[in-house]
Length: 235
Image (cartoon, rainbow, N blue to C red; front, side, top):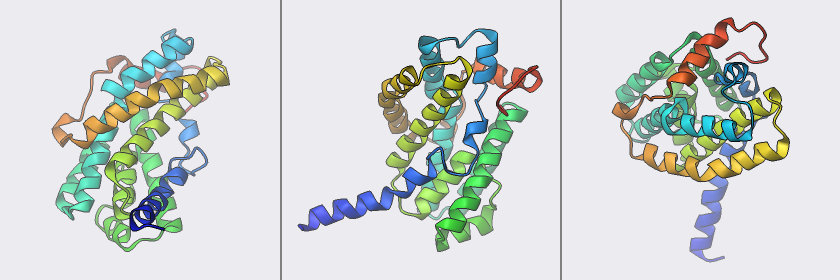
């Protein structure tokens, strides 16, 4: 096998852990969170495939997923450059950025579960050092970013995979709530895949100053959900 072909195979194998880490089967409990979509359905904002796709589009472009991508990129770069003070700052900022109690639970609980699982099943000396510096109670995008960097998984593929996994989880919540058919749900995922790539490309070049967004109704949804009468999800 030519050297270039061997390098490509090695690179692909090196990225394989992402398939497990961002799978719905990975034990972070992502199925339990709707990111406020449950309240959006209750209020009539998300009622069919079209409104679901638009809601998630807005989230990707200027909502929580965009900020997550910025934070993931900052954590990944800090680990790669061994700038551990910067990493601490990114982790602290990520924990403080959540706009509601439930949104903070969503990101912190998944982040801690992710760090516990990766540390146990994919032991890594650099990751052990990171855990000793910032602990395992970190926001979900920070957990994914530092784990990917510690295992030499490139930032762009990590961002694309993370964002598409978020889209899939939001669609899964919508499928259970509306109800939305499985075929319509997977069409939404397919339609939003190019946008996930675009957002990942933007986030790769971002700085911490780019975190934040304008998906105000989504933030309100996460607050309203706290007192919603009947709930399937934790957020």
